[in-house]
Structure formats: C-alpha cells, structure tokens
Amino acid sequence: MATAAVSAPTGSGPSPGPGTELVRGQAFDVGPRYSNLSYIGEGAYGMVCSAYDRENKIRVAIKKISPFEHQTYCQRTLREIKILLRFKHENIIGINDIIRAPTIEQMKDVYIVQDLMETDLYKLLKTQHLSNDHICYFLYQILRGLKYIHSANVLHRDLKPSNLLLNTTCDLKICDFGLARVADPDHDHTGFLTEYVATRWYRAPEIMLNSKGYTKSIDIWSVGCILAEMLSNRPIFPGKHYLDQLNHILDDSADWLLRCHCSSPPPHCCCDILLFIFILFFLVWVCFCLNAPLPMSTSPGFLGSHSSNPLCSGMASGINQSDHPPFCFLFLSFSLGGEDR
Image 1 (cartoon, one colour):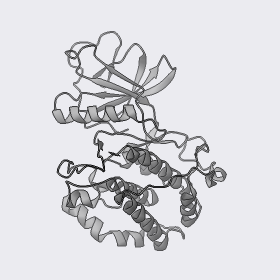
Image 2 (cartoon, one colour):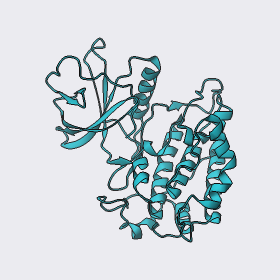
Image 3 (cartoon, rainbow, N blue to C red):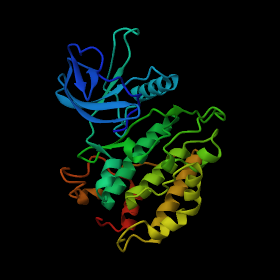
Image 4 (cartoon, rainbow, N blue to C red):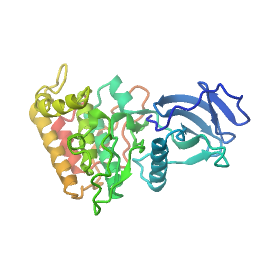
C-alpha cells in the first residue's frame, strides 16, 4: 500500500503508554479502539499497519503520518486529508477515522484509518499475468474512479500500479492523494503547477516539456501506461532519468507495439490489437485535453460468464458482478481474444 508520510521516529524514546503498540520500533498510539496491529509496509513517508477495529469488528488499515518536520509534507498531508474527506466513491479509498493528539502542542503524528485492502496492482503484476477479463475490469474501475476525481476538478498526478489497491473480490480503489491538487479549468494555473509530479515511468511528456501548464490528460497518460503494463507485465517506458524517459516515449512506442514485450506471445497478442488499444487511449487522452466528457454507462455486461477466473491463489470469486463495464470494454475484451493468459 502506498504511503504519504515522513519517516516516523523510532521507539528509542520513552516506553509506550496505555493504548500504544510498538510495530517494528515505531509507536502506534491508536488504542483502545484499535488493537492487534500487524505490519503491512512502509515507504519514504511512513508506515502502514493493519489493526482490529473493536467498534465495527473488522480489520482496517492505519497509516501513521509524521509530516510536521517539513512544510511540503504538511501541505501534502493536509491536501490529501481534505480531498479524501470530501470524496465518496467505491473506487477511491476513503477515510474512516482520523486519530491525533488532543492538543496542537502534543500533536507529532497523525493516524489515518482506511479500509484494509489485501494487495495492490504492483505486487500482483510481479507474481503473475492477468487474464483479459481482469485487465478489462481493472481498467474500467480505474477510469470510473478517475472520472469521479476529474469531475471535482482534481488532478491525482501520481497514478501508478502501487497506488491502485485490490482486495480478494477484485475491487479496486485509487489511493495516495499526496500529490493531488485542485485545478479549476476556468482559471489559468500556468506557473502554479509543480513540475515534479507522477513517478517517472508514468509521467506524461507535457509535464517534462511544459511543466507549468498541464491538464487532466496527465492522469489519462498514466492510465495508458498502466494498461500497457497489465498487458505485458512490464513497464512500457522504464526511463532511468529525465532524458532517457523522453527517449523511451519518442523512440520505443512503435517498437513496443510490434514486440509487445511478450516472451511467448499468444496468437491474439499482435501489433494490430495493441495499435487499436494505443489509438483508443490516444482518443480518450485527446478528449480529456479538450475537456470532453467521458461516457461511463453501467449497462449489464459480459463479465458474468467469466466470473470463475481466479485472480491469484487464495482469491475467491474474481469479479464483482454488481457493477459491470460499459460496451466499449466488451469490445476491448473481444479484441484481446476473450481468453485467459
């Protein structure tokens, strides 16, 4: 799970008080409601643990954030909390609870309680190939959540596989809004948008070439890169630095379409199919550049007959049939061959 916090202090200080649990040397002061903490992961900004919620009798994820050492981290943390408190969508991670010290003088850490998701797309792609049905369903959920985000004039600016959380029923939630910001299309934000946004491999070229003026299309570019990675199990543009990233985008696109990066490609993995997908996302990208609406109907669909496809060992039924992708994803599934990889 992606995190957005600064490294928290280790447990070398005073012994933890009542309601506090130590997790790998870090004190989590989240009791008495939350107990039985278990380490999930950590990033450059902090640690995430799972915990048992005694009030709702479920396990949840708790993210510990210690943002007060730097102004930039404070701004990103505040922005993420304000955005997520206003968003309510099944494909966007929500905030169930916020735990903090009773006074400002005592407040050194903030704990954000969210739904517990078993894994993320990055970890999943490291272990296996996805079936065509799962690729379509994940893509549908990503775009569905992104349409909601963009409808609020918010740019996520850091879409990547590790920021797409998954559970055992194939529900997908977009997380990590630390770099997100509001960008009203009726106002000129030129000169006020940060250049260094999005992980390099998923960064749109206009961010690198025209850093002070970009639109919602940067998120669509990231989604296109994620789709390519789901199809091939490899990043499409793995640049090592700024210039190398541009070279990958400009020089390797056509080559990737021809080779598909498949060690033993199946018959349906051919350049005309990938070209169709590339054109599809190019058109969607252009629509967002022009601020055109992206249609998202929820007509009953084609995934019901394939719901038995397992996502990975230990995952139960695969696909949630309560929400089905629209017709364009049916066409995409047929183009991919309608078979498991």
